[in-house]
Length: 254
Image (cartoon, rainbow, N blue to C red):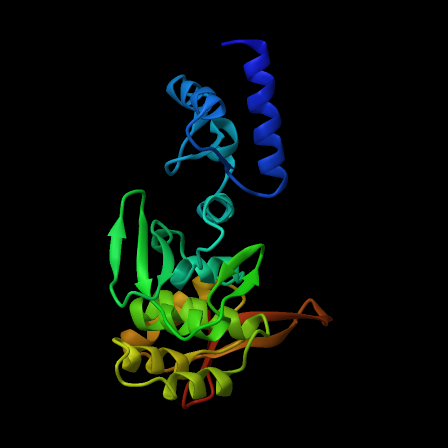
């Protein structure tokens, strides 16, 4: 491999990385240079025509990988609008890594379809795209609604809770939006149950998932983020994730 080719690839990758993006290429000279380096293990190609340094890719967690892929795809397809869990990531919501394997894009065709390269088209109509983190995505409430109706309670609640925690919407606004969706939306009842449980107090997605498990198993709902004074330093306050008060006044904290 020539030094000139190495410089070309390096400059191209650095520019993309400065935008938190995979480098993109179409068939041609640069594309051939990229593919040759993928074959040697220097680069990875997480989706067709998208590239990243192998060493960098190993360091990225799944959410950052999703962000890099979305930015690269947006460059390749400026007209695409991302939806579902992919849009949730770009809105900055708490999305479990395990549900980010598929990239979801909006389609007005009325047909949900999967295509090569982990892209799935979801039927979305009558929505005006917004820009969040340099990507065209479905509006926040539509994004959360779609996630709650398609995901199980645990994953959906993590996304809904984080939207409230970040102050992007309120509990009343979220519930009103879901109730206002026509019955033609599959999973609308699941979305409403999730929205009604949503709470802004959890600090991260794992707290939300654990709370969903408690609900599924029939445990009493805990109070959240309850403050307690440090017995060794009363001026210092700690917050516990979960707190139950038993009938005899005993406190159980988690």
